[in-house]
Length: 343
Ligand code: F6P
Image: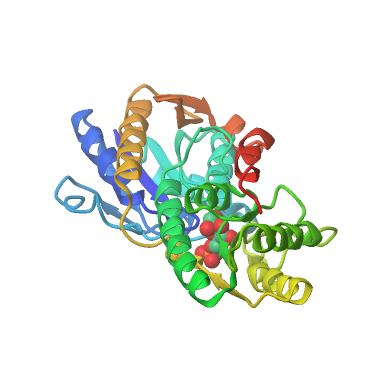
Protein backbone atom coordinates (compact mmCIF):
# COMPACT_ATOMS: atom_id res chain seq x y z
CA UNK A 1 0.00 0.00 0.00
CA UNK A 2 1.14 3.57 -0.74
CA UNK A 3 0.74 5.91 2.23
CA UNK A 4 1.73 9.51 3.00
CA UNK A 5 2.94 11.32 6.09
CA UNK A 6 2.53 15.04 6.77
CA UNK A 7 3.47 17.48 9.54
CA UNK A 8 1.14 20.41 10.32
CA UNK A 9 0.93 23.36 12.73
CA UNK A 10 3.86 24.82 14.67
CA UNK A 11 7.06 22.80 14.31
CA UNK A 12 8.25 20.80 17.27
CA UNK A 13 11.43 18.89 18.25
CA UNK A 14 10.90 15.21 17.42
CA UNK A 15 8.94 15.57 14.15
CA UNK A 16 11.82 14.10 12.13
CA UNK A 17 12.11 11.19 14.57
CA UNK A 18 8.43 10.32 13.89
CA UNK A 19 8.89 10.60 10.10
CA UNK A 20 11.96 8.32 10.24
CA UNK A 21 10.10 5.78 12.39
CA UNK A 22 7.05 5.68 10.09
CA UNK A 23 9.36 5.08 7.11
CA UNK A 24 11.46 2.38 8.82
CA UNK A 25 8.53 0.46 10.27
CA UNK A 26 6.51 1.11 7.10
CA UNK A 27 9.21 -0.52 4.95
CA UNK A 28 9.19 -3.59 7.24
CA UNK A 29 5.41 -3.79 6.75
CA UNK A 30 5.68 -3.47 2.96
CA UNK A 31 4.33 0.11 2.85
CA UNK A 32 5.54 2.64 0.28
CA UNK A 33 5.82 5.97 2.14
CA UNK A 34 5.43 9.42 0.56
CA UNK A 35 6.02 12.74 2.32
CA UNK A 36 3.47 15.55 1.79
CA UNK A 37 5.04 19.00 1.87
CA UNK A 38 3.94 21.70 4.36
CA UNK A 39 1.01 20.03 6.10
CA UNK A 40 -2.48 20.11 4.59
CA UNK A 41 -1.28 22.77 2.11
CA UNK A 42 0.58 20.00 0.29
CA UNK A 43 -2.67 18.17 -0.42
CA UNK A 44 -4.37 21.19 -1.99
CA UNK A 45 -3.74 21.87 -5.67
CA UNK A 46 -1.19 21.10 -6.97
CA UNK A 47 -0.20 18.37 -4.47
CA UNK A 48 3.40 18.57 -3.27
CA UNK A 49 5.03 15.29 -2.32
CA UNK A 50 8.27 13.30 -2.32
CA UNK A 51 9.08 9.62 -1.92
CA UNK A 52 10.46 8.90 1.57
CA UNK A 53 12.94 6.06 1.76
CA UNK A 54 15.25 4.74 4.44
CA UNK A 55 18.11 6.61 2.70
CA UNK A 56 16.14 9.88 2.46
CA UNK A 57 15.32 9.78 6.18
CA UNK A 58 18.72 8.67 7.41
CA UNK A 59 20.58 11.09 9.72
CA UNK A 60 17.48 13.11 10.73
CA UNK A 61 16.67 11.57 14.14
CA UNK A 62 18.42 14.31 16.11
CA UNK A 63 17.43 17.24 13.90
CA UNK A 64 14.90 19.86 15.01
CA UNK A 65 12.17 21.17 12.69
CA UNK A 66 10.64 18.95 10.01
CA UNK A 67 12.18 17.83 6.71
CA UNK A 68 8.67 18.00 5.21
CA UNK A 69 8.01 21.63 6.14
CA UNK A 70 4.82 22.68 7.90
CA UNK A 71 2.00 25.21 7.66
CA UNK A 72 -1.14 26.26 9.49
CA UNK A 73 -3.25 25.66 6.38
CA UNK A 74 -6.85 24.68 7.12
CA UNK A 75 -8.49 23.11 4.04
CA UNK A 76 -11.92 23.60 5.64
CA UNK A 77 -11.39 27.40 5.53
CA UNK A 78 -11.12 27.39 1.74
CA UNK A 79 -14.07 27.06 -0.61
CA UNK A 80 -13.99 23.41 -1.77
CA UNK A 81 -10.65 22.87 0.05
CA UNK A 82 -11.59 19.67 1.87
CA UNK A 83 -13.06 18.19 -1.33
CA UNK A 84 -9.82 19.04 -3.14
CA UNK A 85 -7.78 17.24 -0.44
CA UNK A 86 -10.01 14.15 -0.78
CA UNK A 87 -9.67 14.26 -4.57
CA UNK A 88 -5.86 14.51 -4.34
CA UNK A 89 -5.59 11.67 -1.81
CA UNK A 90 -7.50 9.50 -4.29
CA UNK A 91 -5.63 10.65 -7.40
CA UNK A 92 -2.26 10.05 -5.71
CA UNK A 93 -3.53 6.56 -4.90
CA UNK A 94 -2.79 7.00 -1.19
CA UNK A 95 -4.19 4.16 0.92
CA UNK A 96 -3.68 6.12 4.15
CA UNK A 97 -2.47 9.42 5.62
CA UNK A 98 -0.37 9.68 8.79
CA UNK A 99 -1.05 13.20 10.11
CA UNK A 100 1.40 14.47 12.74
CA UNK A 101 0.08 17.52 14.52
CA UNK A 102 -1.69 19.21 17.40
CA UNK A 103 -5.33 20.09 18.00
CA UNK A 104 -5.71 21.95 14.66
CA UNK A 105 -4.00 19.47 12.30
CA UNK A 106 -5.64 16.51 14.03
CA UNK A 107 -8.99 18.36 14.05
CA UNK A 108 -8.76 18.46 10.23
CA UNK A 109 -7.74 14.75 10.25
CA UNK A 110 -10.85 13.94 12.33
CA UNK A 111 -13.14 15.71 9.85
CA UNK A 112 -11.46 14.11 6.81
CA UNK A 113 -11.87 10.70 8.44
CA UNK A 114 -15.56 11.59 8.78
CA UNK A 115 -15.54 12.13 5.00
CA UNK A 116 -14.35 8.54 4.51
CA UNK A 117 -10.55 9.05 4.40
CA UNK A 118 -8.22 6.45 5.95
CA UNK A 119 -6.28 8.54 8.45
CA UNK A 120 -4.23 7.92 11.59
CA UNK A 121 -2.85 10.65 13.85
CA UNK A 122 0.31 11.28 15.87
CA UNK A 123 0.09 13.85 18.70
CA UNK A 124 2.57 16.73 18.51
CA UNK A 125 2.83 19.97 20.44
CA UNK A 126 5.34 21.57 22.76
CA UNK A 127 2.33 22.90 24.71
CA UNK A 128 1.34 19.32 25.79
CA UNK A 129 -2.34 20.32 25.69
CA UNK A 130 -3.70 17.45 23.56
CA UNK A 131 -6.34 15.68 25.58
CA UNK A 132 -6.00 12.15 24.25
CA UNK A 133 -2.46 11.42 25.46
CA UNK A 134 -0.53 11.69 28.72
CA UNK A 135 2.29 13.51 26.92
CA UNK A 136 3.10 14.87 23.47
CA UNK A 137 6.64 14.75 22.07
CA UNK A 138 8.40 18.14 21.97
CA UNK A 139 7.13 19.09 25.42
CA UNK A 140 10.11 17.62 27.27
CA UNK A 141 12.53 19.54 25.03
CA UNK A 142 10.65 22.82 25.54
CA UNK A 143 10.65 22.30 29.32
CA UNK A 144 14.39 21.55 29.26
CA UNK A 145 15.12 24.75 27.29
CA UNK A 146 12.87 26.86 29.55
CA UNK A 147 14.41 25.38 32.71
CA UNK A 148 17.93 26.17 31.50
CA UNK A 149 16.82 29.74 30.75
CA UNK A 150 15.27 30.11 34.24
CA UNK A 151 18.53 28.86 35.80
CA UNK A 152 20.41 31.54 33.87
CA UNK A 153 17.90 34.24 34.82
CA UNK A 154 18.38 33.33 38.49
CA UNK A 155 22.05 34.32 38.55
CA UNK A 156 21.52 37.67 36.84
CA UNK A 157 18.41 38.45 38.93
CA UNK A 158 20.35 37.71 42.12
CA UNK A 159 23.38 39.79 41.09
CA UNK A 160 21.22 42.84 40.35
CA UNK A 161 18.57 42.46 43.10
CA UNK A 162 15.87 42.26 40.46
CA UNK A 163 12.60 40.52 39.81
CA UNK A 164 12.68 38.79 36.42
CA UNK A 165 9.52 37.68 34.63
CA UNK A 166 10.10 34.88 32.11
CA UNK A 167 7.38 34.47 29.46
CA UNK A 168 7.15 30.95 28.03
CA UNK A 169 4.87 29.39 25.40
CA UNK A 170 1.50 27.88 26.29
CA UNK A 171 -1.50 29.25 24.46
CA UNK A 172 -4.34 27.48 26.27
CA UNK A 173 -2.48 25.48 28.90
CA UNK A 174 0.30 26.24 31.35
CA UNK A 175 2.17 22.93 31.18
CA UNK A 176 5.51 24.42 30.06
CA UNK A 177 5.24 27.20 32.68
CA UNK A 178 4.32 24.79 35.47
CA UNK A 179 6.97 22.14 34.70
CA UNK A 180 9.81 24.58 34.00
CA UNK A 181 8.71 26.75 36.92
CA UNK A 182 8.87 23.82 39.34
CA UNK A 183 12.14 22.54 37.83
CA UNK A 184 13.70 26.01 37.83
CA UNK A 185 12.53 26.97 41.32
CA UNK A 186 10.24 29.84 40.26
CA UNK A 187 8.76 31.98 43.04
CA UNK A 188 5.47 32.53 41.20
CA UNK A 189 3.98 30.70 38.18
CA UNK A 190 1.12 32.17 36.14
CA UNK A 191 -0.91 30.04 33.73
CA UNK A 192 -3.89 30.47 31.35
CA UNK A 193 -6.05 28.18 33.53
CA UNK A 194 -6.12 30.75 36.39
CA UNK A 195 -6.79 34.49 36.04
CA UNK A 196 -3.80 36.47 37.33
CA UNK A 197 -4.38 38.25 40.64
CA UNK A 198 -1.58 40.85 40.47
CA UNK A 199 -2.05 41.85 44.13
CA UNK A 200 -1.42 38.24 45.21
CA UNK A 201 1.66 38.07 42.95
CA UNK A 202 3.07 41.24 44.54
CA UNK A 203 2.25 39.92 48.02
CA UNK A 204 4.23 36.72 47.34
CA UNK A 205 7.24 38.68 46.10
CA UNK A 206 7.14 41.28 48.90
CA UNK A 207 6.83 38.57 51.57
CA UNK A 208 9.74 36.65 50.11
CA UNK A 209 12.01 39.71 49.97
CA UNK A 210 11.01 40.78 53.47
CA UNK A 211 11.19 37.52 55.40
CA UNK A 212 13.73 35.46 53.49
CA UNK A 213 16.52 37.94 53.27
CA UNK A 214 16.63 37.84 49.46
CA UNK A 215 16.34 40.67 46.96
CA UNK A 216 15.43 38.80 43.82
CA UNK A 217 12.54 36.72 42.50
CA UNK A 218 11.68 34.74 39.39
CA UNK A 219 8.16 34.77 37.93
CA UNK A 220 7.28 32.36 35.09
CA UNK A 221 4.24 33.28 33.00
CA UNK A 222 2.63 31.37 30.13
CA UNK A 223 1.94 33.54 27.07
CA UNK A 224 -1.80 32.75 27.28
CA UNK A 225 -2.21 33.83 30.94
CA UNK A 226 -4.78 36.59 31.50
CA UNK A 227 -4.88 39.40 34.03
CA UNK A 228 -7.94 39.02 36.25
CA UNK A 229 -11.03 40.02 34.31
CA UNK A 230 -9.05 40.70 31.11
CA UNK A 231 -8.35 38.81 27.90
CA UNK A 232 -5.18 37.45 26.31
CA UNK A 233 -2.26 39.80 25.55
CA UNK A 234 -1.75 39.85 21.80
CA UNK A 235 1.00 40.89 19.41
CA UNK A 236 -1.54 41.30 16.62
CA UNK A 237 -5.29 40.90 16.09
CA UNK A 238 -4.75 38.96 12.84
CA UNK A 239 -6.24 35.46 12.98
CA UNK A 240 -4.62 32.39 11.45
CA UNK A 241 -6.74 29.87 9.51
CA UNK A 242 -7.70 28.13 12.75
CA UNK A 243 -8.86 31.36 14.38
CA UNK A 244 -5.82 31.90 16.64
CA UNK A 245 -4.30 35.33 17.31
CA UNK A 246 -0.56 35.82 17.90
CA UNK A 247 -0.01 35.98 21.64
CA UNK A 248 2.78 37.85 23.42
CA UNK A 249 3.47 40.65 25.85
CA UNK A 250 1.94 39.39 29.09
CA UNK A 251 5.45 39.08 30.64
CA UNK A 252 6.26 42.76 30.05
CA UNK A 253 2.81 43.82 31.29
CA UNK A 254 3.26 41.82 34.52
CA UNK A 255 6.81 43.15 34.98
CA UNK A 256 5.60 46.77 34.78
CA UNK A 257 2.83 46.12 37.31
CA UNK A 258 5.19 44.36 39.74
CA UNK A 259 7.72 47.20 39.59
CA UNK A 260 4.97 49.81 40.10
CA UNK A 261 3.31 48.01 43.00
CA UNK A 262 6.36 46.67 44.87
CA UNK A 263 9.05 49.19 43.98
CA UNK A 264 11.44 46.31 43.08
CA UNK A 265 13.36 46.76 39.85
CA UNK A 266 11.85 44.29 37.38
CA UNK A 267 12.75 43.00 33.91
CA UNK A 268 11.02 40.62 31.50
CA UNK A 269 12.38 38.04 29.05
CA UNK A 270 10.42 36.27 26.30
CA UNK A 271 11.75 32.82 25.34
CA UNK A 272 9.52 32.51 22.26
CA UNK A 273 10.47 30.17 19.43
CA UNK A 274 13.79 29.18 21.06
CA UNK A 275 11.59 26.67 22.93
CA UNK A 276 10.57 25.05 19.66
CA UNK A 277 13.88 25.01 17.80
CA UNK A 278 16.83 22.66 17.78
CA UNK A 279 17.54 19.11 18.74
CA UNK A 280 15.00 17.01 20.72
CA UNK A 281 15.89 15.55 24.12
CA UNK A 282 16.53 11.80 24.33
CA UNK A 283 13.09 11.42 25.97
CA UNK A 284 11.36 13.14 23.01
CA UNK A 285 13.37 11.13 20.46
CA UNK A 286 12.23 7.90 22.09
CA UNK A 287 8.58 8.99 22.48
CA UNK A 288 8.45 10.28 18.88
CA UNK A 289 10.00 7.02 17.62
CA UNK A 290 7.49 4.91 19.56
CA UNK A 291 4.61 7.02 18.17
CA UNK A 292 5.94 6.66 14.60
CA UNK A 293 6.34 2.87 14.84
CA UNK A 294 2.85 2.60 16.36
CA UNK A 295 1.36 4.80 13.60
CA UNK A 296 2.78 2.49 10.88
CA UNK A 297 1.37 -0.50 12.80
CA UNK A 298 -2.01 1.25 13.03
CA UNK A 299 -1.99 1.64 9.22
CA UNK A 300 -1.21 -2.03 8.69
CA UNK A 301 -4.04 -2.93 11.12
CA UNK A 302 -6.37 -0.41 9.38
CA UNK A 303 -7.10 1.41 12.62
CA UNK A 304 -8.56 4.43 10.82
CA UNK A 305 -9.64 7.52 12.72
CA UNK A 306 -7.32 6.71 15.62
CA UNK A 307 -4.32 8.44 17.17
CA UNK A 308 -1.18 6.99 18.78
CA UNK A 309 -1.26 7.90 22.46
CA UNK A 310 0.90 7.50 25.57
CA UNK A 311 -1.03 5.98 28.49
CA UNK A 312 1.23 5.36 31.45
CA UNK A 313 4.20 3.74 29.75
CA UNK A 314 2.21 2.07 26.98
CA UNK A 315 1.56 3.35 23.47
CA UNK A 316 -2.09 2.70 22.59
CA UNK A 317 -4.61 3.81 19.94
CA UNK A 318 -7.39 6.23 20.88
CA UNK A 319 -10.18 7.67 18.69
CA UNK A 320 -9.12 10.95 17.02
CA UNK A 321 -12.58 12.39 17.69
CA UNK A 322 -12.13 11.82 21.43
CA UNK A 323 -8.55 13.17 21.47
CA UNK A 324 -9.51 16.41 19.71
CA UNK A 325 -12.83 17.03 21.50
CA UNK A 326 -11.27 19.11 24.27
CA UNK A 327 -7.89 20.31 25.56
CA UNK A 328 -5.81 18.91 28.40
CA UNK A 329 -5.19 21.72 30.86
CA UNK A 330 -3.19 21.86 34.10
CA UNK A 331 -5.25 20.32 36.88
CA UNK A 332 -5.55 21.80 40.38
CA UNK A 333 -3.75 18.91 42.13
CA UNK A 334 -0.70 19.29 39.90
CA UNK A 335 -0.62 23.07 40.23
CA UNK A 336 -0.90 22.76 44.02
CA UNK A 337 2.61 21.26 44.01
CA UNK A 338 3.95 24.39 42.30
CA UNK A 339 2.07 26.66 44.73
CA UNK A 340 3.88 25.19 47.73
CA UNK A 341 6.95 27.13 46.56
CA UNK A 342 5.32 30.50 45.84
CA UNK A 343 6.67 33.47 47.75
O1 F6P B 1 1.08 25.62 19.32
C1 F6P B 1 2.30 25.75 19.92
C2 F6P B 1 2.71 27.16 20.02
O2 F6P B 1 4.03 27.03 20.42
C3 F6P B 1 1.92 28.06 20.98
O3 F6P B 1 2.31 27.97 22.31
C4 F6P B 1 2.19 29.43 20.41
O4 F6P B 1 1.18 30.34 20.76
C5 F6P B 1 2.23 29.17 18.96
O5 F6P B 1 2.71 27.86 18.79
C6 F6P B 1 3.07 30.18 18.20
O6 F6P B 1 3.33 29.72 16.93
P1 F6P B 1 3.67 30.56 15.64
O7 F6P B 1 4.33 31.83 16.07
O8 F6P B 1 4.58 29.67 14.87
O9 F6P B 1 2.39 30.79 14.94
